[in-house]
Image (cartoon, rainbow, N blue to C red; front, side):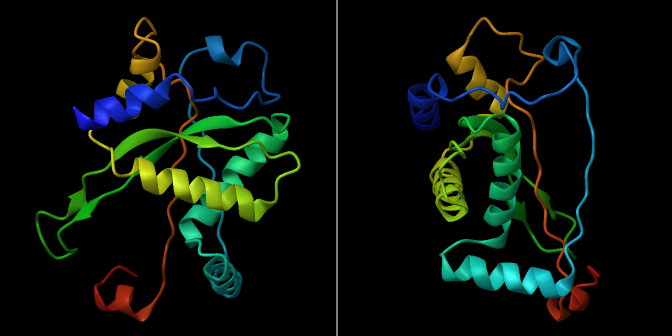
Length: 177
């Protein structure tokens, strides 16, 4: 009930997806999926981590802000929303109960015109962390709060999943390398 109240007060105010210069009629063509993977070399990853830390940001939120900024700039700079995964990993890698008990949620990316990247990243991280306290509803359930008559098979916002592969001694010790 607490999470429903939280999202009900916010869902209708979420901006739509970025208006990207994609194929004509893309919203009406049905579900589609593409996969893009970017590998960041170890030196660049350490620099990103250090720079992020100087601004009170996590590397994951910096990468999410980069994605949102690219979408925003391609879409004319307006605020827009994406659907993100709130990941809640439980157990440890050696446990049979190890798994991701996460959920999806829409996340607003602020307008990108005349806004510094650090401001965008801070806004993304702040919104993500405050919303992460209210994750019992899925992204689709949240969107339905804003538009109860919408087609439940369609997410109103593009889906993004950001993951960081780490390659350190602690991961190697767990057999995750």
